[in-house]
Length: 261
Length: 199
Ligand SMILES: Nc1ncnc2c1ncn2[C@@H]1O[C@H](COP(=O)(O)OP(=O)(O)O)[C@@H](O)[C@H]1O
Ligand SMILES: [Mg+2]
Image (cartoon, rainbow over all chains, first blue to last red; front, side, top):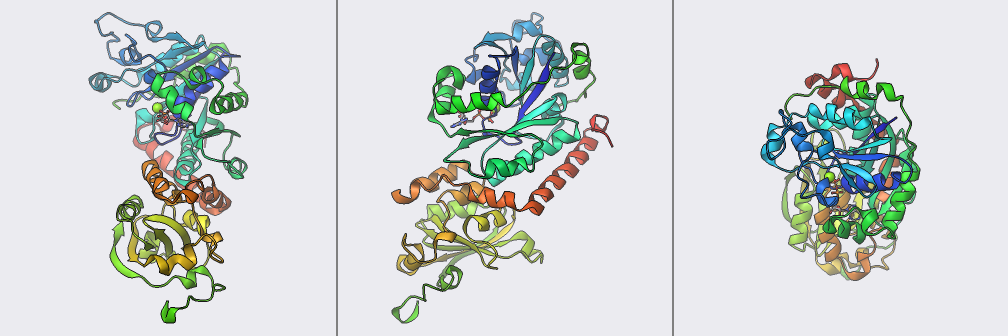
């Protein structure tokens, strides 16, 4: 059984990667969780997860010949790292490798990872402007929309929902990040327009910045911080729906085949 | 500000703003440039903003943002429909925008800007609110906050502009409608129409 979630916001810097790892760690208390850096053009999950030196990454799996840095064939297991109670599939940052990569292979990788996970979290690109950037949203069952409490960020969040809906992908909920002060009425007001609930409000937090600088997920670096507590509460509002195991692989394999990024 | 006395404090703020000296004008494609320029110049005065739909004859109303040393203080829309954060919500996303920059002496704005000024409160915005809500620029927002006097620096925790935006159902629905149409057009362009849901 697996439910795949795209963690998306339609813009950069809202905290998708921070959120992917935080929700992943919180959900890992109850589920088998795999997190994937599906933001292949601007990969940075490796820096948040202490995997900057990972020898094999998703980039190698997406290479047309699926060969690692030393030229040897690599498989999904080689790019999967057990960290912080979950499986983490980072993506490398080589521009040359990105340009050579075949994004359509993400579908195959996701299908394979889906086989042994309850929850698959896809850290998604900051844009909706290309075929490969929307692929995680197309593949996912539902999106977790990460936004900030501003008009431009919320407008982009609405856009993510509408893109997702066009591909039959639902909304698991909306998470407000980098919140100063109290969210006030905004959380309830947002629920009128989003298919999913407001999952929570994560405070603007020095701990989140420090965690990134230390190369650790927030919940590992500062588990007692307010932001970590808010993420745990938000994760409790996500209710992964088990899908029949048999169609998991098919579900992802039958999805789109994008060409170049 | 003639004859040495201020206009009656009972008049609405939008009628009490003295006319300043025009120091620049132009059409901006985003709000970041005029806000950043005002901050860099530590302009005391106000910006008059005429949204793109008004330029095109769409009848949108113009708005004013007052500034103290380049930091936003008060906002209103000249049509009288929206004050403070609600005026920011009305202005958000209306680029291109025609911007006129006016300079005023600090004393001329004191009756409006002072913390105890009568009737100003509904018009006040956080120092970083225009940068956040109009320009979508976190770095400029931080600079605006740091440039604000200490007593205004903490006034950054409100989400009133977003609340005003979300209260405008027609506006939000139009954002959603546009996004849906764009998603379909793009799916077509990318050859993803077979992935589209239903209908
Ligand atoms: N709640 C928060 N408070 C303060 N800083 C945060 C918070 N969440 C994320 N950040 C910081 O914001 C930056 C962008 O976060 P990141 O998760 O990489 O965003 P994205 O993946 O959406 O681009 C990072 O430096 C991160 O440490
Ligand atoms: Mg990221």
